[in-house]
Length: 140
Image 1 (cartoon, rainbow, N blue to C red):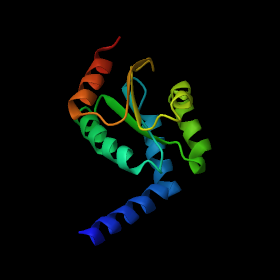
Image 2 (image 1 turned 90 degrees about the vertical axis):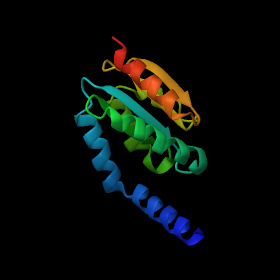
Image 3 (image 1 turned 30 degrees about the vertical axis):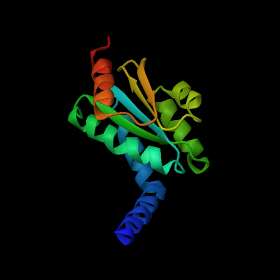
């Protein structure tokens, strides 16, 4: 069991460190985010326990509404600072990124006009994330 976990952790770290994979996913998020609610997950690569607890829950909630919701993950690590800042700026949430660099994990829920409807720090239940997303979807 420990060997499998170690292997999966190494695989995850390798995939998350790949600049090509990150560039592709962030570009896709930017191109189809107009007119949609935006869910932003800000994390630090060294925040493995709590960030890795939040990520799958938020992804699961977001996937239920994938047609009307865009989702991006922003890495606050020093190696990705310029890319992350550019991604935040392209999505109209640079202020949110700058304000939450030290409070990871944080999940922000934005209206299509990029008004912050709700943000949550630390791990929450699936129901809390779903309620925040639904609230953002109803915002005018």
